[in-house]
Length: 196
Image (cartoon, rainbow, N blue to C red; front, side, top):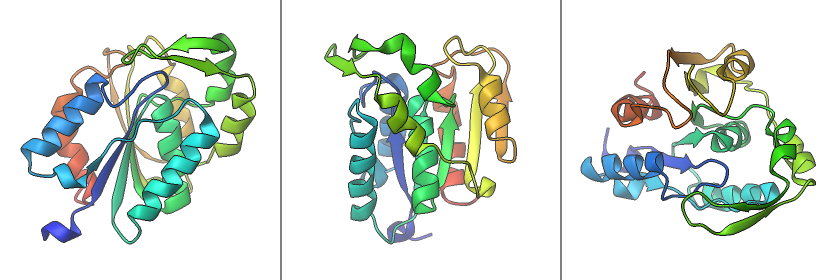
């Protein structure tokens, strides 16, 4: 495959996270080592769901006509599902949040970003905005679900049930950060290229 036909990898970080997260940095480093820096995108997602929607619409508009694979972690996995359905691209979901609007009640008010330390306000109205962005995977062949049973933040079984028709890799143990993620990156790139 010639370089101009290579897909773009768009990494979407999780809630209260940033492009400085461990998995985002590992993805950026791996892409750099493969000489694929130009194919990698990791936007800093705003805390507001509708602002995330607008940002992703702009990003995908800038990549119109290109093959894209979205890699989403936790809440980023929820947004990746929206993007995959909205733009018809592939998506790799890492311990994704399912029905995050039900989890929001525990985070209303000021929250500190794990990497930046910035205080972000979480509003109860975000729940309705998240509901509006929820999508069922209509093209299961476009998805690859990666979950670990030791996820201490989200119940992996919810994701297994929600993405039941999609390709799934369920690893015993691990954690919410997805232990051993860097070792999966070559396989994620193959999936992005439609080779697996």
